[in-house]
Length: 297
Ligand code: G3P
Ligand code: CA
Image (tube, rainbow, N blue to C red):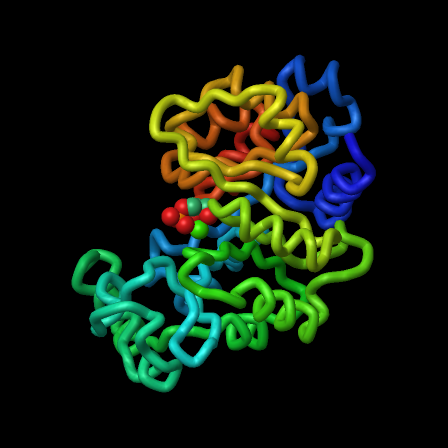
């Protein structure tokens, strides 16, 4: 394990993230220094199982019910503002239509980013969600401050030239990245290796997680893992595509493994038993419960 990774694990331990879990034999024997690793509870788009994704109530809830990190997807407006939104288009999560990149922030701020949730999930509806505004990255950071942890994804970076530079400037302005990488309050994730490599070139202290979109069951070679280790601290992929052998292999290369998006407790438990080091979930409370149950045993 490189020094950086050891420190990431150490800082997680210091901060009391998650619960200590017995790791699979392969992880224990191969990498004893990872035995102290904790399971990171990553609130996917906030507590988005209960509130409209990427809104302040969703992030607040995710934080309150056990999330260690606020997961945040980035898109960029016509006038170059980074906003918290999953899709490249406004249609699904606002009452607007069209591409984010074709609208200014002022225009997007006019939209309602909460009512869709009440309409789609009447059993979870809350009148306070009506009329919620889209948030900029800066607004989220201003709201939650520098003591929270942010797991930020550069979405469609090829569509948004300069996205990485703007992101790093904001993180620097708000003192969320430190010279000592593991003390960083952020992890940056992307499906785009080019985007992560760009960030790495600008600041190699920032922990990076490479997301991988497997079409079929996940397999990975030692050469691929060696390559990822050169710039990333971990990997993320659909939990549905991996098995225990895959998890073992990633762990043997001292990389974190954070599968997405895990909703059911039985899946959470199985993944933890396989040795994952965290996971993205819309229900951080469920993961919290699973971690407590497993710690009791
Ligand atoms: O970032 C991890 C996971 O969120 C990737 O999938 O589509 O939900 O951003 P997506
Ligand atoms: Ca994401």
